Length: 238
Image (tube, rainbow, N blue to C red; front, top):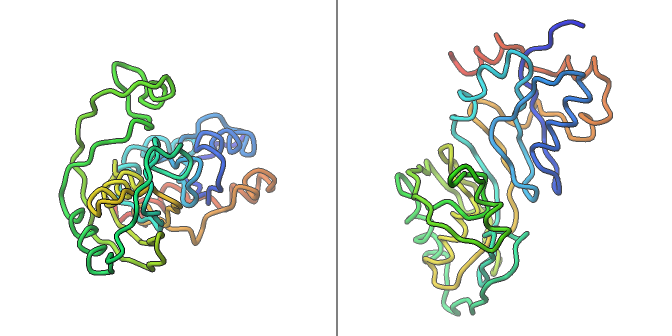
Protein backbone atom coordinates (compact mmCIF):
# COMPACT_ATOMS: atom_id res chain seq x y z
CA UNK A 1 0.00 0.00 0.00
CA UNK A 2 1.31 3.44 -0.94
CA UNK A 3 2.46 5.88 1.72
CA UNK A 4 -0.23 8.40 2.67
CA UNK A 5 1.20 11.62 4.09
CA UNK A 6 -0.37 15.01 4.58
CA UNK A 7 -3.14 16.95 6.28
CA UNK A 8 -6.88 16.35 6.15
CA UNK A 9 -9.26 19.08 7.26
CA UNK A 10 -12.47 17.84 8.87
CA UNK A 11 -15.60 19.76 9.86
CA UNK A 12 -16.42 18.04 13.16
CA UNK A 13 -20.04 17.62 14.16
CA UNK A 14 -21.58 17.74 17.63
CA UNK A 15 -21.78 14.89 20.14
CA UNK A 16 -18.45 13.36 19.16
CA UNK A 17 -14.94 13.67 20.51
CA UNK A 18 -11.86 14.61 18.51
CA UNK A 19 -10.60 11.09 19.19
CA UNK A 20 -13.79 9.68 17.61
CA UNK A 21 -12.93 11.57 14.42
CA UNK A 22 -9.36 10.22 14.44
CA UNK A 23 -10.65 6.65 14.94
CA UNK A 24 -12.99 6.96 11.94
CA UNK A 25 -10.20 8.48 9.82
CA UNK A 26 -7.93 5.54 10.63
CA UNK A 27 -10.57 3.12 9.42
CA UNK A 28 -11.53 5.10 6.33
CA UNK A 29 -7.95 5.77 5.20
CA UNK A 30 -6.57 2.41 6.34
CA UNK A 31 -3.69 3.98 8.24
CA UNK A 32 -2.97 4.05 11.97
CA UNK A 33 -0.54 6.98 12.04
CA UNK A 34 -3.06 9.83 12.39
CA UNK A 35 -3.26 12.59 15.00
CA UNK A 36 -5.24 15.79 15.48
CA UNK A 37 -4.11 19.35 16.07
CA UNK A 38 -6.15 20.73 18.96
CA UNK A 39 -9.05 19.10 20.79
CA UNK A 40 -12.62 20.22 20.20
CA UNK A 41 -15.10 19.42 22.97
CA UNK A 42 -18.04 17.14 22.02
CA UNK A 43 -20.46 20.11 21.95
CA UNK A 44 -18.17 22.11 19.65
CA UNK A 45 -18.17 21.87 15.87
CA UNK A 46 -15.85 23.03 13.16
CA UNK A 47 -12.30 22.71 11.99
CA UNK A 48 -10.31 19.74 13.18
CA UNK A 49 -6.92 19.32 11.50
CA UNK A 50 -5.82 15.71 11.07
CA UNK A 51 -2.16 14.95 10.38
CA UNK A 52 -1.56 11.72 8.49
CA UNK A 53 1.59 9.62 8.11
CA UNK A 54 4.67 11.86 7.96
CA UNK A 55 2.31 14.77 8.56
CA UNK A 56 2.45 13.86 12.26
CA UNK A 57 5.94 15.39 12.31
CA UNK A 58 4.41 18.88 12.00
CA UNK A 59 1.61 18.24 14.51
CA UNK A 60 3.14 20.48 17.19
CA UNK A 61 3.71 23.29 14.67
CA UNK A 62 0.08 23.24 13.56
CA UNK A 63 -1.22 22.99 17.12
CA UNK A 64 0.72 26.11 18.09
CA UNK A 65 -1.03 28.37 15.59
CA UNK A 66 -3.74 30.92 16.37
CA UNK A 67 -7.42 29.98 16.22
CA UNK A 68 -10.69 31.69 15.28
CA UNK A 69 -13.99 30.70 16.89
CA UNK A 70 -17.60 31.72 16.44
CA UNK A 71 -19.58 31.15 19.62
CA UNK A 72 -22.34 32.26 21.91
CA UNK A 73 -22.62 32.62 25.66
CA UNK A 74 -25.71 32.56 27.80
CA UNK A 75 -25.84 35.04 30.66
CA UNK A 76 -27.48 34.32 34.00
CA UNK A 77 -26.21 30.82 34.76
CA UNK A 78 -22.91 29.08 35.43
CA UNK A 79 -22.23 25.36 34.97
CA UNK A 80 -19.66 22.93 36.34
CA UNK A 81 -18.09 22.57 32.89
CA UNK A 82 -18.46 26.24 31.92
CA UNK A 83 -20.52 25.17 28.90
CA UNK A 84 -24.00 23.94 28.01
CA UNK A 85 -23.06 20.28 28.56
CA UNK A 86 -22.58 20.79 32.29
CA UNK A 87 -24.85 20.92 35.31
CA UNK A 88 -26.10 24.32 36.40
CA UNK A 89 -24.29 25.50 39.53
CA UNK A 90 -25.89 28.91 40.02
CA UNK A 91 -28.48 31.14 38.42
CA UNK A 92 -28.54 34.90 38.76
CA UNK A 93 -30.78 37.65 37.48
CA UNK A 94 -29.41 39.60 34.54
CA UNK A 95 -29.23 43.32 35.41
CA UNK A 96 -32.15 45.19 33.91
CA UNK A 97 -29.88 48.02 32.76
CA UNK A 98 -27.36 45.76 30.99
CA UNK A 99 -26.57 47.37 27.65
CA UNK A 100 -24.19 46.80 24.74
CA UNK A 101 -21.59 49.23 26.08
CA UNK A 102 -21.37 47.33 29.39
CA UNK A 103 -21.14 43.97 27.59
CA UNK A 104 -18.46 45.33 25.26
CA UNK A 105 -16.51 46.61 28.26
CA UNK A 106 -16.49 43.09 29.73
CA UNK A 107 -15.16 41.68 26.44
CA UNK A 108 -12.54 44.45 26.35
CA UNK A 109 -11.24 43.30 29.74
CA UNK A 110 -10.22 40.01 28.12
CA UNK A 111 -8.41 41.39 25.09
CA UNK A 112 -4.66 41.34 24.49
CA UNK A 113 -2.38 39.52 26.96
CA UNK A 114 -3.81 38.08 30.17
CA UNK A 115 -3.77 34.99 32.36
CA UNK A 116 -6.53 32.43 32.16
CA UNK A 117 -7.15 29.64 34.69
CA UNK A 118 -7.95 26.41 32.79
CA UNK A 119 -11.24 24.70 33.66
CA UNK A 120 -11.33 21.51 35.72
CA UNK A 121 -12.98 19.70 32.82
CA UNK A 122 -9.94 19.73 30.55
CA UNK A 123 -7.25 17.38 29.27
CA UNK A 124 -4.50 19.16 31.21
CA UNK A 125 -2.79 16.72 33.55
CA UNK A 126 -2.14 17.04 37.27
CA UNK A 127 0.43 14.50 38.50
CA UNK A 128 -0.16 12.51 35.33
CA UNK A 129 -3.97 12.43 35.66
CA UNK A 130 -6.18 14.46 33.27
CA UNK A 131 -8.17 17.09 35.14
CA UNK A 132 -11.47 15.91 33.65
CA UNK A 133 -11.00 12.53 35.35
CA UNK A 134 -10.53 14.25 38.71
CA UNK A 135 -13.57 16.41 38.00
CA UNK A 136 -15.67 13.28 37.41
CA UNK A 137 -14.68 12.18 40.92
CA UNK A 138 -15.97 15.47 42.28
CA UNK A 139 -12.46 16.75 42.95
CA UNK A 140 -11.16 20.23 42.28
CA UNK A 141 -7.44 20.97 42.32
CA UNK A 142 -5.41 24.14 41.98
CA UNK A 143 -4.63 25.00 38.36
CA UNK A 144 -1.81 27.29 37.33
CA UNK A 145 -3.03 30.27 35.27
CA UNK A 146 -1.86 30.23 31.66
CA UNK A 147 -0.67 33.19 29.64
CA UNK A 148 -3.00 33.65 26.65
CA UNK A 149 -3.73 36.30 24.04
CA UNK A 150 -6.91 37.52 22.36
CA UNK A 151 -6.02 39.31 19.12
CA UNK A 152 -9.53 40.52 18.40
CA UNK A 153 -13.19 39.91 19.10
CA UNK A 154 -16.46 40.92 17.51
CA UNK A 155 -19.89 40.94 19.10
CA UNK A 156 -22.14 39.54 16.39
CA UNK A 157 -25.48 39.87 18.14
CA UNK A 158 -27.08 40.49 21.52
CA UNK A 159 -30.40 38.79 22.19
CA UNK A 160 -30.40 38.50 25.96
CA UNK A 161 -29.67 36.23 27.64
CA UNK A 162 -27.53 35.17 24.64
CA UNK A 163 -24.53 37.08 23.28
CA UNK A 164 -22.99 35.81 20.03
CA UNK A 165 -19.36 36.62 19.24
CA UNK A 166 -16.29 35.85 17.14
CA UNK A 167 -12.85 35.66 18.78
CA UNK A 168 -9.31 35.23 17.42
CA UNK A 169 -6.98 33.83 20.07
CA UNK A 170 -3.71 32.09 20.82
CA UNK A 171 -3.22 28.37 21.36
CA UNK A 172 -4.16 27.01 24.78
CA UNK A 173 -7.13 29.38 25.02
CA UNK A 174 -10.37 28.05 26.52
CA UNK A 175 -13.40 29.75 24.99
CA UNK A 176 -15.71 28.32 27.67
CA UNK A 177 -13.52 29.90 30.36
CA UNK A 178 -13.65 33.13 28.33
CA UNK A 179 -17.47 32.97 28.45
CA UNK A 180 -17.43 32.14 32.16
CA UNK A 181 -15.05 35.02 32.98
CA UNK A 182 -17.07 37.53 30.96
CA UNK A 183 -20.15 36.44 32.92
CA UNK A 184 -18.28 36.96 36.19
CA UNK A 185 -17.19 40.40 35.01
CA UNK A 186 -20.82 41.30 34.32
CA UNK A 187 -21.85 40.02 37.74
CA UNK A 188 -24.53 37.60 36.55
CA UNK A 189 -22.49 34.60 35.45
CA UNK A 190 -22.46 32.92 32.04
CA UNK A 191 -21.68 29.68 30.28
CA UNK A 192 -20.71 28.83 26.72
CA UNK A 193 -23.84 27.96 24.74
CA UNK A 194 -22.34 27.08 21.35
CA UNK A 195 -18.92 26.97 19.71
CA UNK A 196 -17.57 26.50 16.20
CA UNK A 197 -13.89 26.66 15.21
CA UNK A 198 -13.66 28.41 11.87
CA UNK A 199 -9.90 28.83 11.43
CA UNK A 200 -6.62 27.43 12.70
CA UNK A 201 -3.51 29.17 11.41
CA UNK A 202 -3.85 29.46 7.62
CA UNK A 203 -6.49 26.76 7.41
CA UNK A 204 -10.25 27.29 7.21
CA UNK A 205 -13.37 25.25 6.60
CA UNK A 206 -13.44 25.83 2.83
CA UNK A 207 -11.57 22.59 2.07
CA UNK A 208 -12.84 20.54 5.00
CA UNK A 209 -14.72 17.28 4.59
CA UNK A 210 -17.74 16.58 6.76
CA UNK A 211 -17.72 13.77 9.31
CA UNK A 212 -20.23 11.87 7.14
CA UNK A 213 -17.91 12.18 4.13
CA UNK A 214 -15.03 10.96 6.28
CA UNK A 215 -17.05 8.01 7.56
CA UNK A 216 -18.74 6.91 4.35
CA UNK A 217 -16.62 8.48 1.59
CA UNK A 218 -14.51 6.66 -0.94
CA UNK A 219 -10.96 6.15 0.27
CA UNK A 220 -9.37 7.43 -2.96
CA UNK A 221 -11.56 10.53 -2.90
CA UNK A 222 -10.61 11.24 0.72
CA UNK A 223 -6.91 10.90 -0.12
CA UNK A 224 -7.47 13.28 -3.04
CA UNK A 225 -8.88 15.90 -0.66
CA UNK A 226 -5.83 15.80 1.61
CA UNK A 227 -3.30 18.60 1.53
CA UNK A 228 0.19 17.40 0.65
CA UNK A 229 3.06 18.36 2.94
CA UNK A 230 4.59 20.75 0.31
CA UNK A 231 1.15 22.39 -0.05
CA UNK A 232 0.85 22.76 3.72
CA UNK A 233 4.31 24.31 3.88
CA UNK A 234 3.42 26.76 1.11
CA UNK A 235 0.12 27.73 2.77
CA UNK A 236 1.89 28.37 6.06
CA UNK A 237 4.56 30.46 4.34
CA UNK A 238 7.22 28.15 5.79
